[in-house]
Image 1 (cartoon, rainbow, N blue to C red):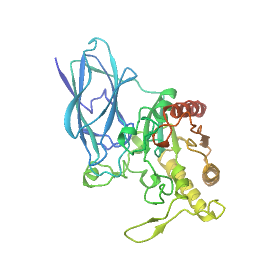
Image 2: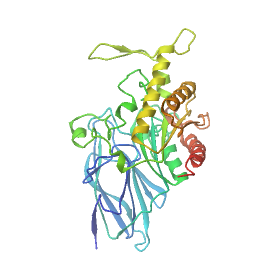
Image 3: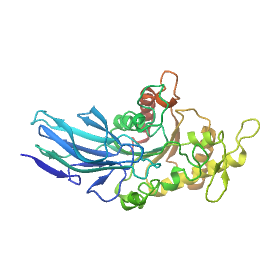
Image 4: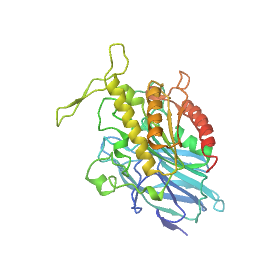
Length: 370
Protein backbone atom coordinates (compact mmCIF):
# COMPACT_ATOMS: atom_id res chain seq x y z
CA UNK A 1 0.00 0.00 0.00
CA UNK A 2 1.38 3.41 -0.99
CA UNK A 3 1.00 6.21 1.55
CA UNK A 4 1.32 9.92 0.85
CA UNK A 5 2.50 12.45 3.43
CA UNK A 6 2.40 16.23 3.42
CA UNK A 7 5.63 17.92 4.50
CA UNK A 8 3.87 19.41 7.54
CA UNK A 9 3.29 15.87 8.90
CA UNK A 10 3.92 15.74 12.65
CA UNK A 11 6.74 13.20 12.28
CA UNK A 12 8.73 15.21 9.72
CA UNK A 13 11.30 17.49 11.35
CA UNK A 14 11.99 20.66 9.39
CA UNK A 15 15.49 22.15 9.47
CA UNK A 16 16.45 25.70 8.61
CA UNK A 17 14.86 29.11 8.94
CA UNK A 18 11.79 29.38 6.72
CA UNK A 19 8.37 31.03 6.56
CA UNK A 20 5.23 29.76 8.26
CA UNK A 21 4.05 28.22 4.98
CA UNK A 22 4.71 24.47 4.93
CA UNK A 23 2.73 23.41 1.87
CA UNK A 24 5.01 23.50 -0.01
CA UNK A 25 8.06 23.97 2.19
CA UNK A 26 10.56 26.49 0.83
CA UNK A 27 14.20 25.84 1.69
CA UNK A 28 16.03 29.16 1.72
CA UNK A 29 19.33 28.62 3.53
CA UNK A 30 22.17 26.13 3.24
CA UNK A 31 21.78 23.09 5.47
CA UNK A 32 18.00 23.40 5.54
CA UNK A 33 15.84 20.39 4.79
CA UNK A 34 13.83 17.61 6.39
CA UNK A 35 14.54 14.67 8.69
CA UNK A 36 12.36 11.63 9.36
CA UNK A 37 12.22 8.00 10.39
CA UNK A 38 10.37 5.66 8.04
CA UNK A 39 9.61 1.99 7.56
CA UNK A 40 8.93 0.50 4.14
CA UNK A 41 11.03 -0.55 1.18
CA UNK A 42 10.72 2.65 -0.83
CA UNK A 43 10.35 6.37 -0.23
CA UNK A 44 10.05 9.21 -2.76
CA UNK A 45 10.15 12.98 -2.33
CA UNK A 46 8.40 15.51 -4.58
CA UNK A 47 10.72 18.48 -5.18
CA UNK A 48 10.49 21.68 -7.18
CA UNK A 49 13.51 23.64 -8.35
CA UNK A 50 14.18 26.75 -10.36
CA UNK A 51 17.08 29.07 -11.14
CA UNK A 52 18.40 31.49 -13.69
CA UNK A 53 22.11 30.86 -13.18
CA UNK A 54 22.85 28.95 -9.95
CA UNK A 55 21.24 25.54 -9.81
CA UNK A 56 20.11 23.78 -6.65
CA UNK A 57 21.93 20.82 -5.13
CA UNK A 58 20.75 18.45 -2.41
CA UNK A 59 22.26 15.57 -0.47
CA UNK A 60 20.42 12.49 0.77
CA UNK A 61 21.43 10.76 3.99
CA UNK A 62 20.24 7.31 5.04
CA UNK A 63 21.05 6.06 8.55
CA UNK A 64 23.72 8.70 9.01
CA UNK A 65 25.52 8.04 5.72
CA UNK A 66 25.48 10.25 2.65
CA UNK A 67 24.17 8.03 -0.15
CA UNK A 68 23.49 10.62 -2.84
CA UNK A 69 24.37 14.17 -3.88
CA UNK A 70 22.61 15.57 -6.91
CA UNK A 71 21.89 18.66 -8.97
CA UNK A 72 18.19 19.31 -9.42
CA UNK A 73 16.78 20.14 -12.82
CA UNK A 74 14.23 22.92 -13.22
CA UNK A 75 10.64 21.93 -12.58
CA UNK A 76 8.62 19.71 -10.26
CA UNK A 77 9.24 15.97 -10.05
CA UNK A 78 9.50 12.95 -7.77
CA UNK A 79 12.94 11.68 -6.75
CA UNK A 80 13.71 8.40 -5.00
CA UNK A 81 15.27 8.65 -1.55
CA UNK A 82 15.64 4.89 -1.12
CA UNK A 83 14.34 1.78 -2.86
CA UNK A 84 14.45 -1.97 -2.25
CA UNK A 85 15.38 -1.74 1.41
CA UNK A 86 14.20 -4.05 4.19
CA UNK A 87 10.60 -2.95 4.69
CA UNK A 88 10.48 -3.84 8.38
CA UNK A 89 13.51 -1.84 9.44
CA UNK A 90 13.31 1.82 10.38
CA UNK A 91 15.37 4.07 8.13
CA UNK A 92 16.60 7.45 9.34
CA UNK A 93 16.39 9.85 6.39
CA UNK A 94 17.69 13.37 5.98
CA UNK A 95 17.50 15.58 2.88
CA UNK A 96 19.68 18.72 2.89
CA UNK A 97 19.97 21.77 0.69
CA UNK A 98 23.66 21.85 -0.20
CA UNK A 99 23.95 25.41 -1.51
CA UNK A 100 23.55 28.81 0.10
CA UNK A 101 20.69 31.23 -0.50
CA UNK A 102 21.68 32.65 -3.87
CA UNK A 103 21.24 36.42 -3.46
CA UNK A 104 22.48 36.97 -7.01
CA UNK A 105 19.73 34.89 -8.62
CA UNK A 106 16.11 36.05 -8.18
CA UNK A 107 14.78 32.81 -9.67
CA UNK A 108 16.61 30.62 -7.16
CA UNK A 109 14.03 28.24 -5.67
CA UNK A 110 13.92 24.93 -3.82
CA UNK A 111 10.63 23.58 -2.47
CA UNK A 112 9.52 20.24 -1.03
CA UNK A 113 5.91 19.23 -1.71
CA UNK A 114 5.21 15.74 -0.39
CA UNK A 115 6.49 12.25 0.41
CA UNK A 116 5.23 8.92 -0.94
CA UNK A 117 6.16 5.43 0.20
CA UNK A 118 4.99 1.99 1.27
CA UNK A 119 5.82 2.42 4.95
CA UNK A 120 4.95 4.55 7.93
CA UNK A 121 6.56 7.63 9.44
CA UNK A 122 7.76 7.47 13.04
CA UNK A 123 8.80 10.23 15.47
CA UNK A 124 12.29 11.73 15.26
CA UNK A 125 13.92 12.06 18.72
CA UNK A 126 14.91 15.54 19.83
CA UNK A 127 18.56 16.55 19.94
CA UNK A 128 20.18 17.85 23.11
CA UNK A 129 20.96 21.37 21.85
CA UNK A 130 20.16 23.94 19.18
CA UNK A 131 22.86 25.89 17.38
CA UNK A 132 22.72 28.79 14.94
CA UNK A 133 25.67 29.58 12.66
CA UNK A 134 26.14 32.95 10.94
CA UNK A 135 28.90 33.37 8.40
CA UNK A 136 30.26 33.84 4.92
CA UNK A 137 31.64 31.49 2.25
CA UNK A 138 33.34 29.31 4.86
CA UNK A 139 30.04 28.73 6.64
CA UNK A 140 28.36 28.17 3.26
CA UNK A 141 30.84 25.35 2.65
CA UNK A 142 32.34 26.95 -0.44
CA UNK A 143 35.29 24.83 -1.50
CA UNK A 144 34.55 22.09 1.01
CA UNK A 145 33.99 19.78 -1.95
CA UNK A 146 35.81 19.67 -5.29
CA UNK A 147 39.43 19.44 -6.40
CA UNK A 148 41.74 22.03 -4.90
CA UNK A 149 42.67 23.41 -8.32
CA UNK A 150 39.05 24.46 -9.01
CA UNK A 151 38.54 28.21 -9.29
CA UNK A 152 35.08 28.49 -10.87
CA UNK A 153 32.40 29.98 -8.61
CA UNK A 154 29.73 27.29 -8.96
CA UNK A 155 27.04 25.72 -6.75
CA UNK A 156 28.73 22.38 -7.43
CA UNK A 157 31.58 23.35 -5.10
CA UNK A 158 29.37 24.22 -2.11
CA UNK A 159 28.63 21.64 0.56
CA UNK A 160 26.39 21.93 3.60
CA UNK A 161 27.15 18.30 4.41
CA UNK A 162 30.92 18.54 4.71
CA UNK A 163 31.49 21.83 6.46
CA UNK A 164 32.08 22.61 10.10
CA UNK A 165 28.44 23.54 10.83
CA UNK A 166 26.98 20.05 10.39
CA UNK A 167 30.09 18.40 11.75
CA UNK A 168 30.03 20.52 14.90
CA UNK A 169 26.31 19.97 15.42
CA UNK A 170 26.74 16.21 15.06
CA UNK A 171 29.53 16.18 17.63
CA UNK A 172 27.53 18.01 20.30
CA UNK A 173 24.17 16.37 19.45
CA UNK A 174 22.45 19.50 18.19
CA UNK A 175 19.91 20.59 15.65
CA UNK A 176 21.22 23.62 13.80
CA UNK A 177 20.47 26.44 11.40
CA UNK A 178 22.80 28.36 9.10
CA UNK A 179 22.61 31.93 7.81
CA UNK A 180 25.53 32.51 5.46
CA UNK A 181 26.49 34.30 2.28
CA UNK A 182 29.74 34.13 0.35
CA UNK A 183 31.67 37.38 0.29
CA UNK A 184 29.55 39.11 2.93
CA UNK A 185 30.68 40.58 6.22
CA UNK A 186 29.70 42.51 9.33
CA UNK A 187 30.06 46.01 7.86
CA UNK A 188 30.67 45.41 4.15
CA UNK A 189 31.32 42.65 1.66
CA UNK A 190 34.76 41.77 0.34
CA UNK A 191 34.40 44.49 -2.33
CA UNK A 192 33.28 47.29 0.06
CA UNK A 193 29.53 47.01 -0.65
CA UNK A 194 27.78 48.15 2.56
CA UNK A 195 24.51 46.54 1.47
CA UNK A 196 26.09 43.09 1.68
CA UNK A 197 26.33 42.80 5.44
CA UNK A 198 24.59 39.91 7.23
CA UNK A 199 23.41 41.99 10.23
CA UNK A 200 21.14 44.03 7.94
CA UNK A 201 18.98 40.98 7.20
CA UNK A 202 19.26 38.94 10.40
CA UNK A 203 15.74 39.66 11.65
CA UNK A 204 14.09 38.55 8.39
CA UNK A 205 13.44 35.01 7.25
CA UNK A 206 15.86 35.38 4.32
CA UNK A 207 15.82 39.06 3.43
CA UNK A 208 18.91 38.99 1.25
CA UNK A 209 16.86 37.32 -1.48
CA UNK A 210 15.17 39.70 -3.92
CA UNK A 211 12.36 39.53 -6.46
CA UNK A 212 8.58 39.27 -6.36
CA UNK A 213 8.51 35.50 -5.94
CA UNK A 214 10.80 35.51 -2.92
CA UNK A 215 8.71 38.32 -1.47
CA UNK A 216 5.55 36.23 -1.94
CA UNK A 217 7.23 33.20 -0.37
CA UNK A 218 7.91 35.16 2.81
CA UNK A 219 11.65 35.77 2.49
CA UNK A 220 11.27 39.33 3.79
CA UNK A 221 8.91 38.47 6.62
CA UNK A 222 10.08 38.98 10.21
CA UNK A 223 11.57 35.76 11.54
CA UNK A 224 9.61 34.03 14.32
CA UNK A 225 12.36 33.88 16.92
CA UNK A 226 10.03 32.60 19.63
CA UNK A 227 9.45 29.38 17.68
CA UNK A 228 13.11 28.36 17.66
CA UNK A 229 15.59 29.63 20.24
CA UNK A 230 19.21 28.43 19.98
CA UNK A 231 21.40 27.47 22.91
CA UNK A 232 24.36 29.08 21.14
CA UNK A 233 24.82 31.48 18.23
CA UNK A 234 28.16 31.07 16.46
CA UNK A 235 29.31 34.09 14.42
CA UNK A 236 32.03 33.44 11.85
CA UNK A 237 32.35 36.85 10.20
CA UNK A 238 35.22 39.27 9.59
CA UNK A 239 37.16 37.59 6.80
CA UNK A 240 35.48 39.65 4.08
CA UNK A 241 35.58 42.87 6.11
CA UNK A 242 39.34 42.46 6.11
CA UNK A 243 39.42 41.83 2.36
CA UNK A 244 37.57 45.10 1.75
CA UNK A 245 40.60 47.07 2.95
CA UNK A 246 42.59 45.67 0.01
CA UNK A 247 39.96 46.20 -2.71
CA UNK A 248 39.00 49.24 -4.82
CA UNK A 249 36.07 51.40 -3.70
CA UNK A 250 32.53 50.21 -4.32
CA UNK A 251 30.30 52.77 -6.05
CA UNK A 252 26.54 52.96 -5.52
CA UNK A 253 25.17 53.25 -9.07
CA UNK A 254 22.05 55.06 -7.84
CA UNK A 255 23.67 57.75 -5.69
CA UNK A 256 27.21 57.82 -7.06
CA UNK A 257 28.58 57.54 -3.52
CA UNK A 258 31.73 55.45 -3.11
CA UNK A 259 32.53 53.26 -0.11
CA UNK A 260 36.02 52.13 0.85
CA UNK A 261 37.67 50.59 3.89
CA UNK A 262 41.04 52.35 3.84
CA UNK A 263 44.60 51.30 4.56
CA UNK A 264 47.35 53.65 5.71
CA UNK A 265 50.69 53.82 3.92
CA UNK A 266 52.20 51.30 6.31
CA UNK A 267 49.39 48.84 5.44
CA UNK A 268 47.67 49.26 8.79
CA UNK A 269 43.95 49.90 9.01
CA UNK A 270 42.68 53.47 8.97
CA UNK A 271 41.53 54.18 12.52
CA UNK A 272 38.11 55.51 11.47
CA UNK A 273 37.38 52.52 9.29
CA UNK A 274 38.44 49.81 11.73
CA UNK A 275 36.40 51.66 14.35
CA UNK A 276 33.40 51.47 12.01
CA UNK A 277 33.85 47.69 11.78
CA UNK A 278 34.04 47.41 15.55
CA UNK A 279 30.91 49.53 15.99
CA UNK A 280 29.05 47.31 13.51
CA UNK A 281 30.19 44.22 15.42
CA UNK A 282 29.01 45.69 18.73
CA UNK A 283 25.63 46.61 17.23
CA UNK A 284 25.26 43.09 15.82
CA UNK A 285 25.92 41.52 19.21
CA UNK A 286 23.22 43.71 20.72
CA UNK A 287 20.82 42.62 17.96
CA UNK A 288 21.67 38.96 18.47
CA UNK A 289 21.01 39.23 22.17
CA UNK A 290 17.68 40.98 21.65
CA UNK A 291 16.57 38.12 19.40
CA UNK A 292 18.14 35.25 21.38
CA UNK A 293 17.59 35.99 25.05
CA UNK A 294 19.44 33.08 26.63
CA UNK A 295 21.93 31.87 23.99
CA UNK A 296 25.67 31.82 24.33
CA UNK A 297 27.07 34.26 21.76
CA UNK A 298 30.32 32.90 20.38
CA UNK A 299 32.44 34.70 17.80
CA UNK A 300 34.40 31.90 16.11
CA UNK A 301 36.89 33.17 13.55
CA UNK A 302 40.21 32.36 11.91
CA UNK A 303 40.06 29.59 9.31
CA UNK A 304 41.48 31.95 6.65
CA UNK A 305 43.70 33.92 9.01
CA UNK A 306 43.16 36.21 12.00
CA UNK A 307 43.89 39.82 10.92
CA UNK A 308 40.56 41.06 12.38
CA UNK A 309 40.90 39.21 15.66
CA UNK A 310 42.15 42.24 17.69
CA UNK A 311 39.21 44.31 16.43
CA UNK A 312 36.78 41.50 17.26
CA UNK A 313 38.23 41.31 20.78
CA UNK A 314 37.76 45.05 21.24
CA UNK A 315 34.19 44.88 19.95
CA UNK A 316 33.29 42.05 22.32
CA UNK A 317 34.74 43.93 25.29
CA UNK A 318 32.79 47.07 24.38
CA UNK A 319 29.60 45.05 24.04
CA UNK A 320 30.14 43.38 27.41
CA UNK A 321 30.77 46.74 29.07
CA UNK A 322 27.65 48.26 27.51
CA UNK A 323 25.35 45.33 28.19
CA UNK A 324 26.75 43.58 31.25
CA UNK A 325 26.29 40.38 29.24
CA UNK A 326 28.82 37.71 30.22
CA UNK A 327 27.45 35.01 27.93
CA UNK A 328 29.62 36.12 25.03
CA UNK A 329 33.06 34.83 24.08
CA UNK A 330 35.59 34.44 21.26
CA UNK A 331 37.06 31.24 19.85
CA UNK A 332 39.94 31.14 17.39
CA UNK A 333 39.32 28.50 14.75
CA UNK A 334 42.31 26.54 13.39
CA UNK A 335 43.87 28.22 10.37
CA UNK A 336 43.73 26.37 7.06
CA UNK A 337 47.04 24.88 6.00
CA UNK A 338 48.48 23.70 2.70
CA UNK A 339 47.42 20.19 3.69
CA UNK A 340 43.80 21.17 4.40
CA UNK A 341 43.03 23.62 1.60
CA UNK A 342 40.07 22.77 -0.64
CA UNK A 343 38.60 24.14 -3.86
CA UNK A 344 38.76 27.87 -4.66
CA UNK A 345 41.54 28.38 -2.07
CA UNK A 346 38.96 27.83 0.65
CA UNK A 347 39.04 25.38 3.54
CA UNK A 348 38.61 21.79 2.40
CA UNK A 349 36.99 18.90 4.23
CA UNK A 350 40.03 18.28 6.42
CA UNK A 351 40.02 21.91 7.54
CA UNK A 352 36.31 21.72 8.36
CA UNK A 353 36.79 18.50 10.33
CA UNK A 354 39.58 20.08 12.37
CA UNK A 355 37.53 23.23 12.99
CA UNK A 356 34.49 21.20 14.05
CA UNK A 357 36.47 19.07 16.49
CA UNK A 358 37.98 22.09 18.23
CA UNK A 359 34.79 24.16 18.15
CA UNK A 360 32.68 21.29 19.48
CA UNK A 361 35.10 20.84 22.37
CA UNK A 362 34.74 24.49 23.32
CA UNK A 363 30.97 24.49 22.88
CA UNK A 364 30.68 21.48 25.15
CA UNK A 365 32.13 23.52 28.01
CA UNK A 366 29.79 26.45 27.28
CA UNK A 367 26.68 24.31 27.14
CA UNK A 368 27.29 22.07 30.14
CA UNK A 369 24.86 23.93 32.36
CA UNK A 370 22.01 24.00 29.86
